[in-house]
Length: 145
Image 1 (spheres, helix red, strand yellow):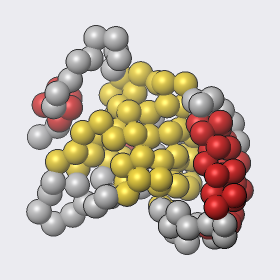
Image 2 (image 1 turned 120 degrees about the vertical axis):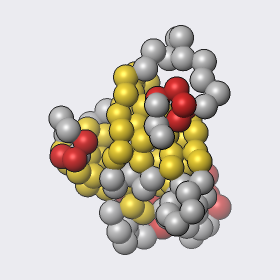
Image 3 (image 1 turned 90 degrees about the vertical axis):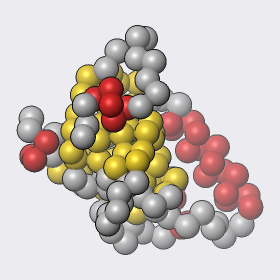
C-alpha cells in the first residue's frame, strides 16, 4: 500500500524529545498495531527532527488495552498523545508500568523500518534483515537524502 494511503488512528508516545521517540500506534489504513522505537534521528531547521524507527507488531487490541491502562492520566487529546507520567498515587504508577511491560513483552519484531517525523505522516518504509543490518547511520543506509 502506498505510504500516502497510510492513516494513523491513535499514537501514544512514551518518550518524546523534539518529537516521538518511542510508543505505540494503531493504523486505520493499513490495519495494524505496532510498537515503534527510535533507531536514528537528524535535526531539521524548521520542523520536527527526521526519525527512523524500528517496528514491532502488537497483538490485536493491545493499544486499546494500553489506553485503558493509562486512563488515570486522562484521555488522548489528539491523534498523537504523549501523556504526562503523573499518576494519582505511586501504587497506580507501579501497577501501570508492570502491566505496560507485560503487554509490550508480547510484541514481535518485524523486519520493517519506517521514516516519520511525527507518526502521522509516513515518509518511507523498508524491509530490513535485522541479523545482517549493522548500521551506524540509518539515513545513509536507507538512502534518505
